[in-house]
Image (tube, rainbow, N blue to C red):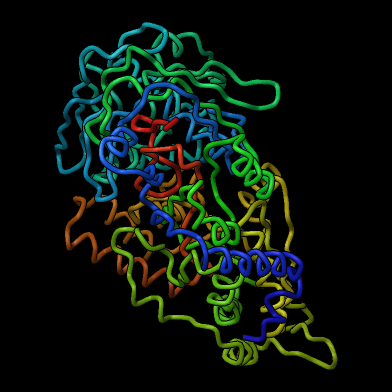
Length: 563
């Protein structure tokens, strides 16, 4: 690729990153070997009893954490985002937990039964669980937590979409909760381990008015909320009575940590500075250039977490000109140099991805990666054939008097970085990409009203139901993220069929492979990469692990701090 294309609009950032990468290569050549990414904090140096002692969990200490995104709302039904979810999942317990292989473990539910062909789920609750306010766990608390999500006054549309065709919730006794669905929905299990479905104290639920936001959730989790400071730091302290942790974790009792403090630090260089200064022990989303610079430094440890999601890129509104033209969507896909973006902007940490599902999502169809590559000549040929012509000295194509201008809305990285890199690439084939950076609220208002041509792809799940159905099903999804404005009966039928099938079967895999092929025929997006999130931490931090979908860490049950 001609590097000028990639860096016309982000040259200064590229030069900064290149300089950092060069420094990292020099440092790596003379530094000791780092602990492999993804293994947690490096072991302390030494041998024999000293090493063994260093690896024994210690009680006490506060984990300070600078988060990549805002965390103003830790209401489980209305979280600000994944950063808020990191806090919520340490305060609230869910009915079940899940590992990366889609194996389920008891949490607040000691057992469960799936009956009536996937239309009825019965959960038996664990005995002896108490909330932070002393309330006992009852089926009414579980039902009330889910009913609150479903109440239209709560306005939890994005979370409601994960519940599929849920019909009724019953609590026939204090220890039993029954969920019934209008259609088979085996994928229910793939949703309820997530922090959105953490169970609130029945006393707190009883105190809430319909539609009232939870500012300080009271749960039964390993930590309880102390409060939020004026400068935005959420403080948690260990819940000493905790005794019901899932067997997914090594430590099922009260956490090793005395507490944790979370604050949103959205500016990358500031967040990194807090790690290097020791102010924070953990930071999210380490910039790839800085990861290259620091990963050989024994003072730090890094965790690479592949994010199971829709391929990172941009939805394309199939009903708004000019992206309503399939030829335009095809040309965009041929015009983007994905490898150059991954290598130059993200230092090869992330992986090129073309199809709708990222690495790590069950049933991902690898053959789709051959569908599109970088071929500007082919993009121009497609546009010419569709009547989008260049004329005179104007590099931007037009058709019937309409300029080939695309509005791309974005509100955060890595989408903003990718969008800037794409501008010059698309301009080279005659497409004028207008990148509009917005705040979260106005951005969501715009894309939910389908006022954009392109918007960030959105959906995280290790299963295609939580991605394809949420992003592309045109019926039956309340509050989904169909920002591509797709209405396709053939795809709808496949997604309905897949959601009703038993998990893990060959038949279900075939349905989702067909669904992926259909998505690529419609082409309501341009995929660029599968994201690998990098968490940076002090070498003092042990037991830190990623969640199954890679979007958040696991709750802090097993985390401890070395001296």
